[in-house]
Length: 129
Image 1: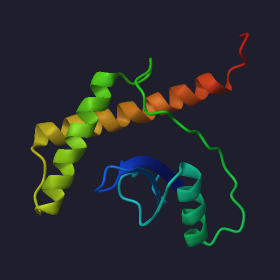
Image 2 (image 1 turned 45 degrees about the vertical axis):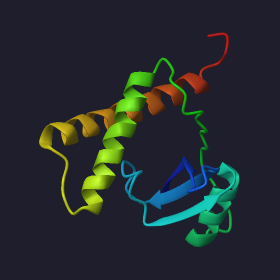
Image 3 (image 1 turned 90 degrees about the vertical axis):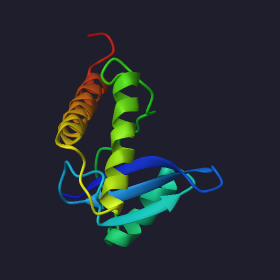
Image 4 (image 1 turned 180 degrees about the vertical axis):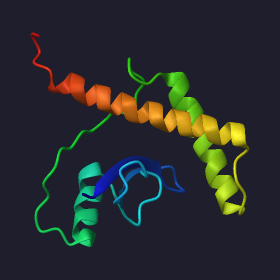
């Protein structure tokens, strides 16, 4: 199964767009082998689906507002963003993060995955349960 991540980005002028990335490894949302960019999340997904050669999209689509919630706090989001900036900088320079930074990044990615799972489970619950 192909996993797709859609992330908000900003171009050089500061205009918001969305980048859709695919990877057949479910936990590798940062290193997709195909990607597309669109003005909306839907445009990015449509363009990526065309690249994948899919004539029909079938799957569960969860759109997150990327705001802090009970599952992943603002502090966690800020630290994850900071560590991802450091990771990209290190990668671009042919280096690696310090071991404690890499461990913290790995922990936050796992926490974000657990939060997404919990968020999805909460969405699937009947409202009056």
